[in-house]
Image (cartoon, rainbow, N blue to C red; front, side):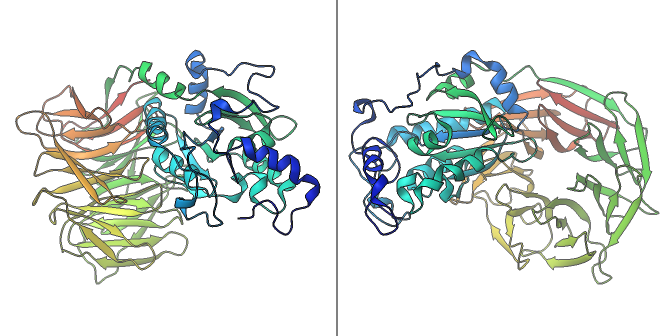
Length: 530
């Protein structure tokens, strides 16, 4: 970190920069409360009024589709503190968030989840207040020096261009990028000065500078909109597949189709929800497919316990390719799979194994699970951590994707029967506890567990899935229902299934809907709320 007066900064532009630092929030920022500072030259009211998100529901609809960049000034800080150190990691010598700022950041993230706004990359300047804002709101953050302001770097005149490049960079498909920065950094780059906790939304690849401003949102406006937003009326609809299918797992695809494993028939199916038409794919003699997911290549990837193999089905041609487990790993009882960011597939086997397949090379490794038999559900977090749940072992485990070793984490309830596992946007892991009749969540950062018993006299939670609003869905055999849990309010709501004993064994979704497989009725069911 370089302060004014250090080598490499020319005195010709130090005076206006020092004056800016008196009123700004980055670098050597002022300890004067913001309400007492004179408004900067490019004030928020210059030629426009800040747009209120609540008055523009179309903004939320656009953000739900992704493709935007949100620049956010960190939330409220303690102006009795000043920035006096050279080490961004030393929070004791910086102006940090106060209690209101920490509450604002958490509420902002909860509002995004409630509104169903998908968030991809989360970048923040290296200061503690920006990183803490991002972490409290979105559960993850990566530091970027491009989000510092000019007074923090030697070549300050080039700093606005670095932030402009981030504003012009297209987000991940179907998501929005969040940039947490400082008032003068955002003003220098985009010509708009933000108060603490205020944000401005841009669309990249537009306008003269490579981005175009869409809306400006005042502090607290996201939360007010979320409080007024309705969760949406949930409608259940079922689709008949074919007699004797015994559907076990489902995987909604980006093209609108829904793959499912027809375990009893030894086939993979593909449903077109628009027409109700079902395509059937034979996987091989002796097939008993359990899990299915859609890979980064858009193909269906199947864990087939009958073939003791991972099976890939091409989306267009429906061509089948099998990847058998090594001969010294017979009868693995394959269950479910997940991909990491490197495109490698990780899978579980209830016999007491988990493994890794590199689709590019076909190389496979199989590992003995600590604790023996039981590995069942498996998932990858937004931070690229792979976790599995062990049904027989009554634990969860984190897999080191480099070494392949797994570390067991024990839930507080013994013998709970951790069956399936799924992460939320904050990196917390939700677990269906089959034997205990409970829903559990584990926060790896804090190493803390919480558990809630499902409603009803005999709950039997099988599958778990977290939707795009961070609401948690569970399939309950005991109640013959899909159950939704709101983590913010700690409330359950049950949606009974139409046919008795439906036995929904797995859940997976896409924005606005959650799909399940009714294994006992040869049907797929979807819960929709938009």
